[in-house]
Length: 196
Image (cartoon, rainbow, N blue to C red; front, side, top):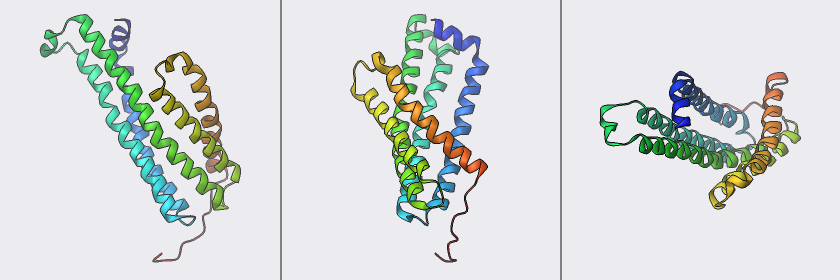
């Protein structure tokens, strides 16, 4: 009940959160293309594979946003929902919020594989510091460990804080380092001949 009341009290903020996620997903599609073009000279096939995994993540996360729209629908007081009692509606709200959390974990599996391949490509490229590639590979392992622990461990909630540290510490360091490098130093990739 408290969760439902909080969502309804801040419905605009909840909707802004959905819009923010949607903008992030749209940017991920663009980033998939940018990294593919930037790293295809290292390995066209691996660069394309990394882009496909990032697009798969974006697809999963985009579909996963439906769970949050279902929450809003359940709390909308629409006439057709009158067949449900208040407690049933609140239970369904929590079900869809939990489903959204699980969907995010599924999306992070694809993102983890993307980060692993991207890290390898950056390491091999010669136009990024190799440490950035190593950091991304460590971050990818954190994403994969956390997601699979969530799927495989029935008492994941008891260790969620530990897994969050395993994921977010390396991910923050790796992704922030890559972002800052690109913003401050930039990259001059080797030119690819026309028709290649």
